[in-house]
Image (cartoon, rainbow, N blue to C red; front, side, top):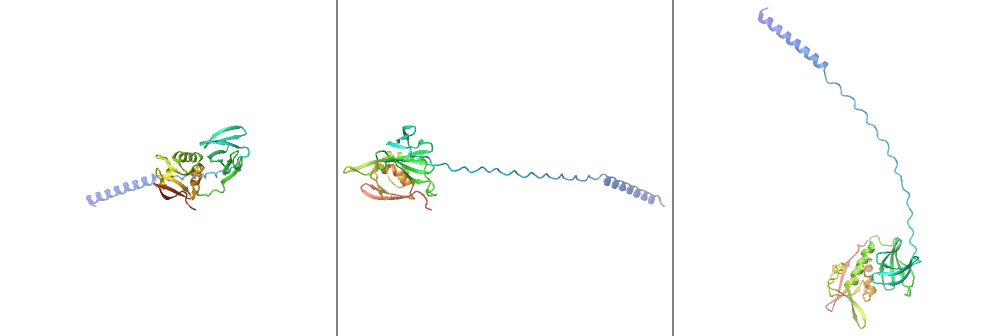
Length: 243
């Protein structure tokens, strides 16, 4: 064998030996097998929710011991078991009973069971307690205004409307300049207009002014009849959505 051929075979054998050694080392030192993932612990079943027993509805306050001795522009003189005192509009007469409105011969009281009228002593319905509207019978789409808001409306109408008299009687109520009465303004009434009818009823007494907030709040539409510069006009304003 020639020297060149001998060198070729020796070189090839050396390369084969190195390759075999590399394969042995890499196979033996391969990456370790991945450790098995631990099993996830199942969360415990939630404890059942405790259901609180339903409390029975509170009984309606007893109004039989109340006596109405007088009425003012902003309140009423009412006698209770604790004595006689002046109760302002929007304040509690006794626990659970709020004075909502004052009218000519009675006061309107608000309770959890609804609205009640308490007659004035010496009046046509002295000391009588009459249900006006019960909570269960009130239309679902007409929400009663809070006592404080109703009180504000009543005072706005009292201050913003001036009686017009003729032949010794009231013939309507004129809108005073600068009066704050948003509902009448929305209906288009202006200062100097004389309101003479609301929802088909003649607007001709102080009692009508006190009842105006309730009359409008309990209607689907407010219909106003008024005079402007001697001319009779009408205006209609939606108040509550119809069912």
